[in-house]
Length: 186
Image 1 (tube, rainbow, N blue to C red):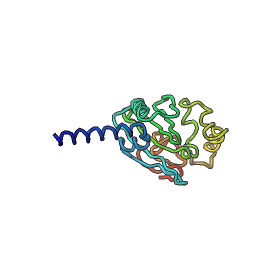
Image 2: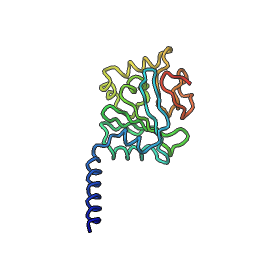
Image 3: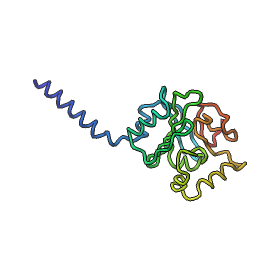
Image 4: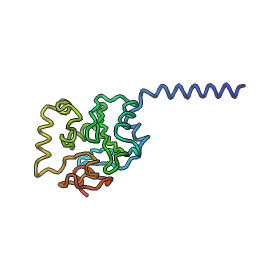
């Protein structure tokens, strides 16, 4: 009888601990615990973006799962095989894996990485145009487009799924699943 009571108390205690922690799961921790890390994109300024793979899951399925785990501050529209979820200071960018529409790349980037390296056109249609300018400061979209379109700049990023690895001066021509980051080259 004592063993059964001890087992019952242990089970209830474990359940209580699990339930107490349910609301405090951080999305980045959930992603790293449940998906395979396939790459880390690193900028010259040592800003990192982590890339995970969700096998046999489409973008919408992954988005729904992540939204259930932690409600984002902003949910971007699903457009052309990609969707963005914004949490506090984290961007979770979901894209179809190149040539594998049943697999999803999950890129976790902080605001600074997105502000400094993403081409504003990447988010077109997913977010209200002024939302990123409000978040990053007035005129960010215009200033970032100008910087990205400069012939002397090769530090703008179109998401991991577009090029695989950051490859300066060769936007859209890199191989997938190769690593690196803005400004690091091949």
